[in-house]
Image 1 (tube, rainbow, N blue to C red):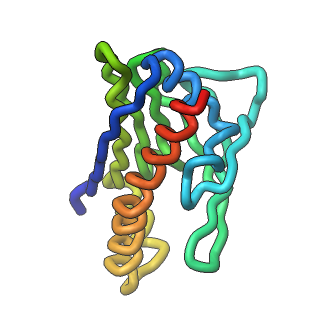
Image 2: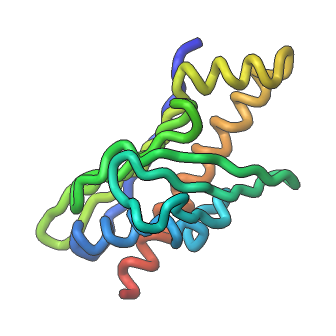
Length: 154
């Protein structure tokens, strides 16, 4: 199975450093994500690449938890993590310019995640994969709009 990806961008009238500080504060994720209602560090004293956190998610009358690992933490430039054992990759790329920051959020359903869904959902895997892909495409613009709102209000 081939990976799936979706990304979108927004212009935020705030510095790349300020936007990075916001998005890398995973405890605030529930403020902007339509699906992730909250996150917490597994070890509050460990941050940055290799640190893990638990995410709490709700969608379509179901809830679930995920464990994610930070894979990139480059202040003012890029922040990202992988869910589970390389199932899904989420990342934020920041490009500073004179009046603010271009913030791009990217979601990638990786081959291991597609295989995991195939094993978990069997004959219903294609439907489950498509539902998850559509959810990401739907949520990303909402997430970016809310991050923009929060960052610009600060």
